[in-house]
Length: 75
Image (cartoon, rainbow, N blue to C red; front, side, top):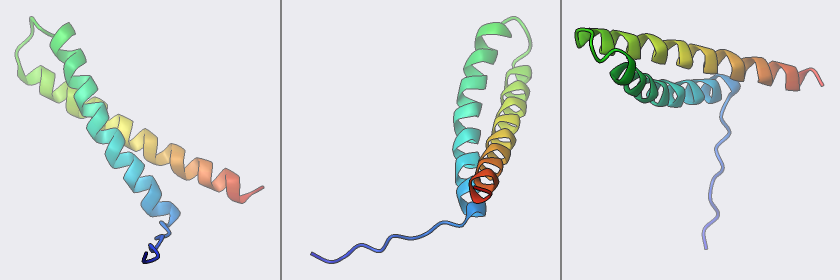
């Protein structure tokens, strides 16, 4: 059986991967929330709310992963 190559992600690449996943999950969750709580408002509010919350979730995830990696390097 051939040996698999284990690729090493840099801390920057790992943080970007987590941020992208948080963006997609955050958008989906925020859109569902907006549909439930902004049902009486015009529909573009749902999309704007979902994009805003998803961007915040992605940025937060990116920052948290980089912060955790810096803490681990200091040990």
